[in-house]
Every structure is written in C-alpha cells, then in structure tokens.
Amino acid sequence: MCSIILALSTLFACVTLSYANRGPFLEQIGNTTWTFGNDLWNVTQGAIYASNVYFRGTELVGSASGHYMGYDGENNFVWSSAAITSRGEDYIDVSFSCKEGELHWVIFDGQAGAYQYFVNRALPDLKPTCATSPSPDFSLYQNATKVQDETWQLANGTFITKYDFSDYVRERDFYGVYGPDVGSWYIHPGTDYYNSDHLSQTLTVHRESATGDSVQLNVVQDTSHFRVGEKVVQPAGKVWGPWLWYLGSVEDAKEQSSEELAKWPYSWLKDAAYQSRGAISGDLRLSDGRPASGAAIFLGDTDSTRRPSIQGRDYYYTTQTDQDGRFSLENVRSGTYGLYAWPDGGALAGVYTNLSMSGIKVAAGAVTKLGPLTWSVPDQSKRLFSIGEFDKKALGFRNGGPPYQHGVSEQSPANLTFTVGKSQTSDWYYAQALVGTWTIEFYLNGSDLALGDRAGSATLSLSFAGYSQSTAMDVTINDQLLGSLDKDTFASDPSLYRSGKTSGEWRLVQYSIPRASLREGFNRLGFIITRYTQWRGFMWDSIILEWA
Ligand SMILES: *[C@@H]1O[C@H](CO)[C@@H](O)[C@H](O)[C@H]1NC(C)=O
Ligand SMILES: *[C@@H]1O[C@H](CO)[C@@H](O)[C@H](O)[C@H]1NC(C)=O
Ligand SMILES: *[C@@H]1O[C@H](CO)[C@@H](O)[C@H](O)[C@H]1NC(C)=O
Ligand SMILES: *[C@@H]1O[C@H](CO)[C@@H](O)[C@H](O)[C@H]1NC(C)=O
Ligand SMILES: *[C@@H]1O[C@H](CO)[C@@H](O)[C@H](O)[C@H]1NC(C)=O
Ligand SMILES: *[C@@H]1O[C@H](CO)[C@@H](O)[C@H](O)[C@H]1NC(C)=O
Ligand SMILES: *[C@@H]1O[C@H](CO)[C@@H](O)[C@H](O)[C@H]1NC(C)=O
Image (cartoon, rainbow, N blue to C red; front, side, top):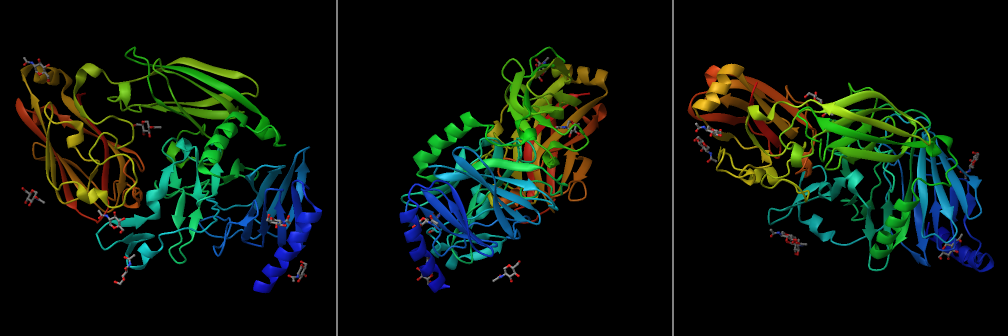
C-alpha cells in the first residue's frame, strides 16, 4: 500500500509540471481508480473511498477513511465506472456509476471544490452520506461510558454525542469540518430535494468513535433520526442536488454560500426537468378576518393523506407568510403540488387548525396566484386559556429550543403546578419524563360558566412537539380520567433521546370535557406520568382549552 502511494505522488508531481493550468480533468489510473479535480485540488477515487484530497498542495484526509457514499448510513455505493458526461467552456461533469445510480462531480476551472448531484436509478430508500478529514479531542471518548448509540457519558456526568451536531436542514447556510487553514464544506443553496417540511432535521458532522476521525455528513434524505421512521419509495430519475462541496476558510465558505444562493438554480445543469420552474404566491386569511401572519407554508405532495413530515418522493418548498398573510415561492419545479399551512407561533399562537389544498399546478415560467384563501379557525372568544405557542415546537418552555443536548429531559421536575394568569410560559418545561404530576390550575367564574352552559362542553387540545416511547401519561380533569397517552397511542420518534429540544414528530390530541366536569373556582388539569423510560417522554408544544 505504502509503496503505491509513494509511486503515485512521485508520478503526479511530474504530471503537475507538464500539465500546469490544464483545468478540470478526469484520469483513470486503475481498473476502479480515478483521479479528478482541477488546478487547485484533486481527489483519488477508488471503488468505495475517495482517499486522497489535495488542496493547494496539501493532502487533507490523512489517515481518515475519506469520502464515501451510500444509503442507510452505510458505505454501500461501489463505483464501477466514471466518465465525463457533459462539458461546457469552463467545466466538466464527471459521472461515477454504481448500481443504485450516478454521482456527478461538476468541476469548474479554478473553483475550490465541486458541485455534486446524485441521480437515482434503483435505490431502495435513501440517506446518502459522505465523509472526509481528521480532527482533535478523541481522548475524551477513551474514558467515557457508552450509554446509547454514538452517545458517551463523561466522568463529570455530561454527555458527548453526534446528535448534538444536528440541525434543521432548510435553515442552514453551510457546514463542514475545518482545521487551522482549510475546511471542507457543504453548501446547499437549493433545498427542494430534501424530504419533509420545515421541521426536517439531520446530522451534520460527527466523530468516528472507533478511529477518532471527524466525519462530515451530507444526509440528503433523512427519514428516521428525528421523526417516526417511514420508508419512501424513490422514483428513478430523482435528482438530489446539485450542492457545492467547497474547500476554504470559514470566511471563504460564508462568502461562497451567499454567491451560490444568488446563482441557484444552476443554469449549467443540462436537465430539462431541473430547469423547468415557475413561481407561486398566495394570500391567506383566517375565518375570523385576521391575516394568517407568520404561518408555515409547505408546498408538498398533492396527496395530503401523507403528512408533510414523511413526504419525500419528489421536491419540496417551504416558506413563511408575512405579517399580511402573503407568501411567494420562486424557482419551484413545474408540477402539481399540495399546499399546507399551519401556525408557527406569533400572531397565530392560539390557532391549532391548518389549511390544506390539493392539485395546485405550477407551470414553467408562470406565476400561480392563490387566494385569498380562507383558513377556518375556532372562535377566539371561546378560549379559556392557552399555554405555549402552537408551532409544532417546544420553544418558549424551560429548556426548550437550541442547542441540541442529550438527556436534558431528566432536568424537568417530576411534579409541577402551573397557575393560569400567574405562571409564565417558561415555568412549564419543554419535556415531561419523570414519574409525577404536572398540574394546571385555572379559575372559572360565573360568567365563564354561563358561556359553558351554552356550549355544553369544552375542548382540550394538547399539541406535542414529539414523543419517545415508552413513557406513559394519564390526562385528568378535576381527578377524572380523560385519557391515557403511551406507545400504543403514539408511534415513537427518537428526537428526545437524540438531543432534540425543539421538535420531533408533531401530534395533536383533543378531549371533550363535559360542562358538568368543570366548576366555579379552581379547576385542575392533570398530566400524570405513570411510566418512566430514561431520556424518553413527551415534548410539549401547546395546551389550549376552549368552550366547544
Ligand atoms: C479489471 O477489470 C476487468 C474487467 O472488468 C477484470 O476482468 C479484471 O480482473 C480487473 N482487474 C483487476 C486488477 O481488478
Ligand atoms: C494533485 O494535487 C497534488 C498537490 O497539488 C499534485 O502534486 C498532483 O500532481 C495532483 N494530481 C494530479 C493528477 O493533477
Ligand atoms: C483518562 O483516564 C486516565 C487514567 O485514569 C487518565 O490518566 C487520563 O488523564 C484520562 N484522560 C482524560 C482525557 O480524561
Ligand atoms: C465535563 O467535562 C468535559 C471534558 O473535560 C468538559 O469539557 C465540560 O466542560 C465538563 N462539564 C462540566 C459541567 O463540568
Ligand atoms: C391539520 O389538522 C388535522 C386535524 O388536526 C391533522 O390531522 C393534520 O395532520 C394537520 N395537518 C398539518 C399539515 O398540520
Ligand atoms: C411528586 O409528588 C408525589 C405526590 O405528592 C410525591 O409522592 C413524590 O415524591 C413527588 N416526587 C418528587 C420527585 O418530588
Ligand atoms: C371572569 O373571568 C374572565 C376571565 O376568565 C374575566 O374576563 C371576567 O371579567 C370575569 N368576570 C367576572 C364577573 O369576574
């Protein structure tokens, strides 16, 4: 092995001299070994790993395993051939084939990095990952105790885990791993090939616990880490990317990321479906006359029986409405979509309903204008109270929100009393896990109950940002059982035990409370944990009580 590497570097030193400024290139140097790159960088690709990454004369991968790709988190793509499939004045498009599809590297003259995209041929289900580069602090793992997958507890009780390095895929600018001089980055200016909605999360980087190598991930189809896992059939011809794999300093990457945003969608990609794009705009009003301000807007599958979190066959677009309830999306691939809108806190904090529409056509070069559309909401005057903002996230509650951190649900108290009108939102915790009772005390006076006499019952809406089994909860009103929530009611999502403090898979449960179960004076809603499972539990979003 060593002698081969030496021989290659000697050979390439000569090649560089004779081919100075030769621009983008692909060279086959063995049966399943290729070198490609440009005058700034080059990569040597084997059947599975691309091991040598030279950038401005320095090798970046070292003893780490290098770049690989596959599905289900494995290095299972085996490259059997490579060819330049198209070229322009200043670039070549190199396609590496494996039986599942083709990974393209689009190499421009003088660019510090390359665009990549993957075209599906025969994937069962996908979460491609790519990896590069070494880094420090491996010593911490040696004395730590492994407590769950890729999660270790240090002597002082704190945890280290790859899940702490996760984020919301549609909110990223760029990410990667870097040393003192140079970093390896992924810049995804377009995100339409990512599955799922605003709440789509995945890992970014981690340390290979066996070797200490730093791993830079590029997960473009995550169907399981932070939601209820569900496989999605991938149509042949689906394209993930192009994104940019970029080499440079943090400052360079930042600048490059805004340049890529301005260039997206890329005009150089010779793919008619990729280039066929239109725009859509809309105007959303609530049925009570208010504009649907700051709502989450998702352009997804036209089949709305599949919830946004598990959609992932095609291409997806997300945005927010403005203060006036208007939204617009540009550069949407032409096709037929479903439109979904739901509250994202702010002015819509107390709304738990949503709007969905099917069969919306976006045509190339045209703007589809929707609206005004009316979104039905319950009569706000029937509201008794709400705690937390409805946004499918645990924001606003104690310990809720970033950063990702393992095991924080254990810091929530077992028992808690929240008094409506007196307690603050931040007195409620983001997650409930320990055996005990959380109580909401609320006062009803004669005029409240007179409204209740007319309504006959109240509706309790419990919105959860996530749930990890097998924690179980009884819900009571004035000590009467309304229902029990557990692993038989909710399918488990891994968010809470994988450092999620904002959201996992959203759920809404509603109970009808007969007027007779409520009384003048203090009433008590109880949330009683009857079964504990370490690091698992209920992640709260909001609680709303109103007359029916
Ligand atoms: C090279 O490829 C040919 C054709 O696929 C195969 O017969 C041969 O065994 C390969 N040689 C090596 C060294 O892998
Ligand atoms: C790859 O880059 C290294 C370092 O700059 C250089 O020595 C080598 O010749 C390059 N390889 C090719 C095939 O250009
Ligand atoms: C690990 O434990 C050994 C022996 O107890 C100690 O010498 C060393 O400093 C520890 N390393 C770290 C990183 O805590
Ligand atoms: C626990 O130990 C790690 C590793 O030494 C250190 O980085 C961290 O700050 C410590 N945390 C606390 C709360 O002591
Ligand atoms: C809309 O609300 C219904 C009823 O609560 C729910 O089943 C559905 O999942 C919601 N859809 C979205 C996109 O939030
Ligand atoms: C929670 O309250 C119950 C009932 O009052 C009590 O038995 C239990 O000890 C409390 N748990 C903690 C951790 O304080
Ligand atoms: C009853 O309580 C409501 C708030 O729940 C308050 O707006 C109203 O003024 C109260 N009415 C009386 C008569 O105290």
